[in-house]
Length: 335
Ligand SMILES: NC(=O)c1ccc[n+]([C@@H]2O[C@H](COP(=O)([O-])OP(=O)(O)OC[C@H]3O[C@@H](n4cnc5c(N)ncnc54)[C@H](O)[C@@H]3O)[C@@H](O)[C@H]2O)c1
Ligand SMILES: O=P(O)(O)OC[C@H](O)CO
Image (cartoon, rainbow, N blue to C red; front, top):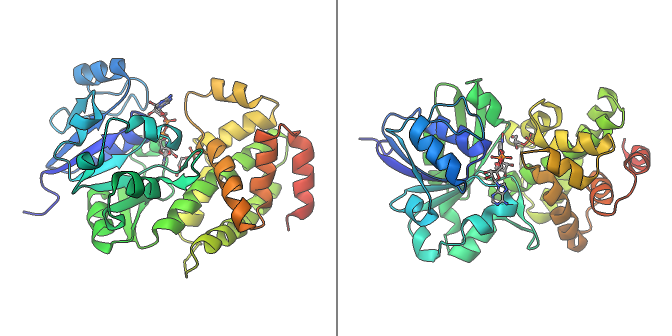
């Protein structure tokens, strides 16, 4: 019997990505999914009707495979893998009832493309420091993949990155199904930082589009962004990496250009004149790039890497500078 049979997976989070990941996992024949959501009404609804009423409500969630829990402690009980799929800003609050013992012996997979705000550290580092999970038992899910397209069963690709090849390979098998191909990769930090930074770039693309700039300028910004990502990631973790592959460039492209991108949508509202508060209130979904901008900007105070796009977004979001003036200045430094 392969390890895929009867694998128990806890999923933490009730948003679109958690729902999409559960849909992918439900493609495995013998699997037990233990799902924690914070919203009690959603829990009731899923138990009764087998759909998440708040996100991707068309997705059927097989009751034979999916059990829903009110408490995180219950959800992680006996799990082989624990997937974290809440926005980074809420991960501490979501896991507050857990201690080291609850995650002992389990592999933890972060599906989060963000950093812990205030601490400015990667989610994987936070998990390994706070819960003493060995780094080799930690992985991240990356790649150009929107939950909305998973719901529609559109062919998608994921990258599972870990410092441990076995951990990445095992989890890739669980994530591969009729409409998803998952590949393992051994670049935990590179993949995770690139995923955080692409959200800032998508926000910048949204801002410039909202201001009336076109595809020509966006193409220049995306290509400059790859340099920005390369320099920053290399300063933190120097090594050979193929940044033109889907885990890095692919993810940046889908976020920068897709109609489904939360970060681009959020930026677009800012470009059209919304305040940060108004844009956040208007969106039911979370734009990770808002928090990431501050974390990367703060982290860079020690590294001093040239980050013109991130700096421009920081000035607009956190220093309330005029989007049009900041983007006009940015145009002078991009090549
Ligand atoms: N949606 C995607 O296509 C996609 C793809 C890849 C990665 N991700 C990543 O997955 C993570 C989750 O994003 P998502 O798209 O599922 O989010 P979402 O915007 O669809 O849903 C918002 C989530 O935030 C939770 N939330 C909102 N306010 C909260 C609060 N005050 N306290 C605690 N939780 C709160 C909601 O319960 C819900 O789980 C993010 O890091 C995102 O970058 C998303
Ligand atoms: O494109 P966004 O801003 O919705 O982010 C979602 C995912 O990170 C895409 O891979």
